[in-house]
Image (cartoon, rainbow, N blue to C red; front, side, top):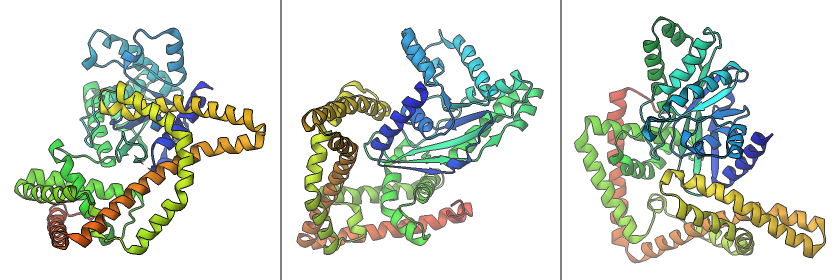
Length: 455
């Protein structure tokens, strides 16, 4: 009961925090089989919450064991009710590592009962578009459970790529990319013959299979250039391959191939990567100086589009104010708490969301009680209550459109006053696209691939 109450509260909070959450192959999650759900780890305990709330099956997770150390009996009871099993890592000290044997035994029992255990194979949270090598702990759980039950459980593994647009940013996008389930029977046979070989083989398999479901940039130095190429080149790729920009799978596929292309340049053609980086830096520096966006260099906004935005902002202003009145204070409280408490970026969204759950629930309940008291009408009170979250979402969307409208106005002002510089920007962008077209052909010939084949 506790698990499902917490699950639905967190589901509402996560849907509110992130602007759009998309899925690929979620229906492939098997039922009534022992399952290890394996995902990349970039966003602290938010990752486990996201995986749990969008999964029909009840899920066990393996958070840091230090959370349990010194915890009261009530906390430990609550943790167990929401499916938390402590795991202790060497990087946090060796004195508690012996307790992992109990953790493994608990996982074995979950799998024996055809349950689901969620594991992060990297065993560390890094807020980057980058996978670390899989550790052996996941294979130990899978093969250990099979060994404890005479290799008859039929344990399966399923991979999930958690691809955040900006994990810590409110109303950013999230794409969950699920694989098909894989059985591990071949690794069980190898494990029976040689335990070390079985563990190593399954660990390598996990490391290889999870990577296609995430965007992986080999070198941190290339994070910016990948993002810049995505901005400049994606519109062209959508057009060339007849893909849809609003389709999350198509977006992911193009971003993944852009990252792979940059990885290739770093390994095989570093001089061309340096040239591309310098051109991108020069182009985006000019955009930043003039405070305009690449979008409008690629596609000039027409006057009717601008007027449409103005009309929406004018008519929607009263609703925006209503949304601000009902949502600004709890939103400000949760942001302030996160700003003061969080020391590491990967915890920001998690703390903001949990603080938001508390502040919004208290504030909404208080406002609802006041309306009930003064209106003396249950119908009016219920209508008011139903508009609280909706008005908050509208106000957030309004602010986003207002920001875009201001950006368009800056472009129009720039267009009218600095024609020479605008022509230079258009020329630089065209030159970059041409260079990227040439590099794409080199990359495709080298790898003999069509990037749309996996759509």
